[in-house]
Length: 435
Image 1 (tube, helix red, strand yellow):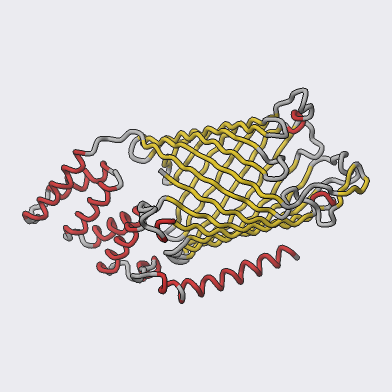
Image 2: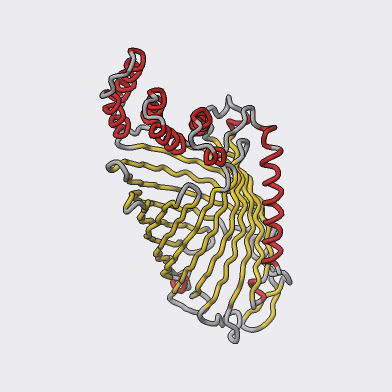
């Protein structure tokens, strides 16, 4: 019943926001936005397509700008202004090989007037003056506050099962958690279509009343982005350590690969496989930490569809399998289904999703109930709004790389044991700054 209510709720929100995108949107836009649907309807309209390219460039979507201009150069091969515009964008986003190729092509033309030739020479000089940047360094800093009405997943009846007996669930429900994080990334191009990534991160989290969720974590990720057979592939390796205030320290390593490809102008598909190992620091104070040491395999597949420049949808499927040293209560399989709607308004980005997870455990947990094999279903609905501070206060954030994020999440868990039959709501406010 909860599943169908969530779907109907999601459908109502989609319809209402769809109406908003067509009627309220113009009030927030000084200049009328050209949608991708209009481009599909009039692919040869020179003026419309140029305005669309300029519009995409202003918001930093250079991929759409370049693809639009490249298509126009094929439709209008004699139009020098389009090629010069494309050249300036290629230089701006540091794509030297494509820029040099286009420059050499234009040098062979005999119909360039003096002014166009001078502009071409200036662009070529700008390209020569640019030193080849092998490494690009970036940093992200974030702070967040989370308020939850059921931080410990207390059951709806406030009762739980212990070794087959019914007991009171005495854990606190309401609490706040504050967190902060910093990550440093270094990327380096490898050839024309590949790049290498190294990322280190640190996160700290503090719970205000209880301290069960107090921890500090450290992580390292190495990855490669490349293209093979027309598909984007991203193999990666990760290692992390989490220091918990009231529990054993944990260590994890993982590796995997993700893939991505498009079909036409509107459809895109992604898939992935991951392998992970998790270990707890078994010591005299944490004598059961080794019990949950586990290995896991995960598989994902998703489809994204672009309705318009504003509205897009996503559907995701997932399967994971976890095997621990102590099987009882720790070994399980998970089946995931997620549905999402993304709304890219000029004034904010809104993401709405509804996820369903089915967990099947492989062996009875005698600490809970010896005669029952745990099985549960969790429905998670969330909505998130992201806004650049620079859109509101340009003087504070001229480059629009300081973001405010507001989110709400509701979890409904239903299980065949009291312990995991609960509802939880949480609200989150976070700020992220990129350098």
